[in-house]
Image (cartoon, rainbow over all chains, first blue to last red; front, side, top):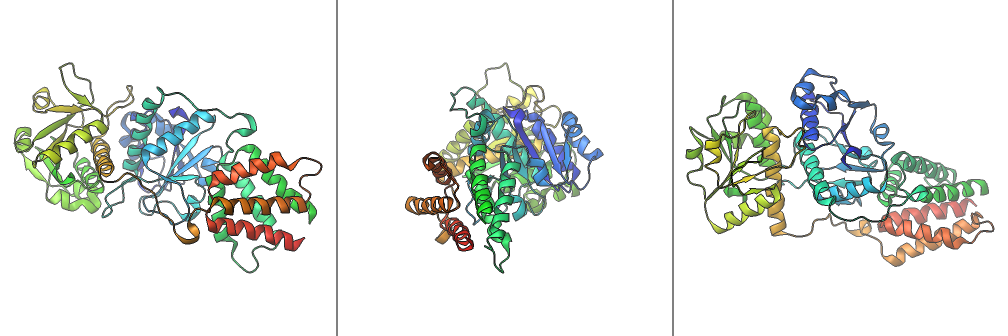
Length: 243
Length: 243
């Protein structure tokens, strides 16, 4: 199951952290590393910190944006050091691991776990692309983990949980259009919705950004199936036809 | 309870690992760092990698031998990457955390967790000073964790387990309109949606029942907040006005 887990590091500043993350991944049997706009990569320091995990560094996929790094994923989990006041599902690492592995069994597509910048984490726009969040509990007076250390904790929980998991029996496996939609398909629906909202003059003089981010979070939380997305597209198209 | 946990690093070669371990400790509310014969300490690199945890670096106690570092401890747990053929009690990290915390509650003396050299771990003589061992499960093809990453995993398990002791549930508690909507409020939205779908002739000659049930399941799964329901009602009303 772990081969479908994808670690996504966004805009990492220090190549040493990329190398240390790759090593942590390999120790825990993870393989897929995606790097969104890294500051310095390829890098000798990344390769040296990776030690036995140079293969992960050599196979790392560099992407220009988070949305391109997750478009083919069936579930996107963001890491967050802060508590968020929007209506997120926030899990602790062990619960997150159960969720991610269940998804890997149910849908044959990658599950992404997204790690933000060293100092500032993920932006609100990037968080809105995530379907749920994971928060590593920390000392409230010193809550900022090194990013490679955070990858280590998450990778450890996944590896550990897979071992628990393989011994237990399994839930129903939806197929065809009842499978979870991919992240890119949810984005397409979100764009269709925004288009119809414009056509019916929902926004007036207001900035659409805030409301659209809320709707994005809502859609991602719902984890719609492909069939459900088709129905929603159908409703929007029926509205457009009627106008 | 965590104030009585002591992290002991034996003969560490790279001062960066001491710094990274200190940071991992502070993030997880550990304070006591003992260094047995470190190769290079004090060190600017250790302080820099420690970031906000310089206090732990400054208060670190340097000892000439492992036995002097653990003399006042009530329990000594060694970390081991290999399985040992002697008759050790070897625990996984979560079980180790339960053991260590139970000991901290029972005896007012430190509990030491001992980490070996980067390349070679602990010697047999050093292991013989330990009361039991902890083994972090890893990929058998690549089992050697970075020593600071190992400190991170162990510190995380200790911090996490203390919280289990102290509190059960963990969730952000939204208030006002960010609270989860009531079932009846979701039903009202569902009815509003059906009405608009009728008005735009979505159903044609088909029975709406099947599609409406799917939408109901989708909405319920999403667990919308009151604010999100208000937005969705707003979109539907804007559409009706436009028609």
